[in-house]
Length: 80
Image 1 (cartoon, rainbow, N blue to C red):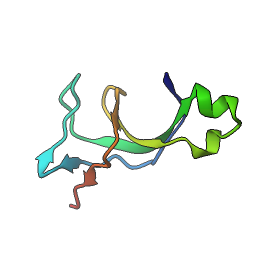
Image 2: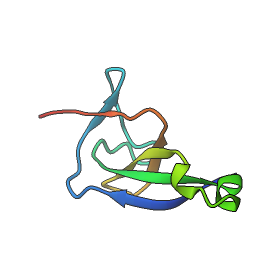
Image 3: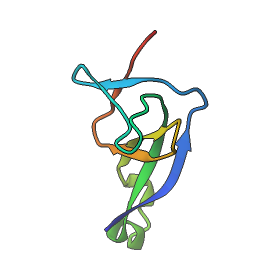
């Protein structure tokens, strides 16, 4: 089982896309997000004291409603 043990976000909201498609919040439809990273924690790695070797995921937190979307493949920020 994997759990997020840390979520850190950048200050300025931004629009993002994956494979040319604009991302929108699945809850409210807003298109600006705060990017962050979350460490994925596994019980086995914790038992061995190797938490630092766990993978990370990219998170995008909706600037409007706060819903956090998780991505294994990092989305691209749209430049204005």
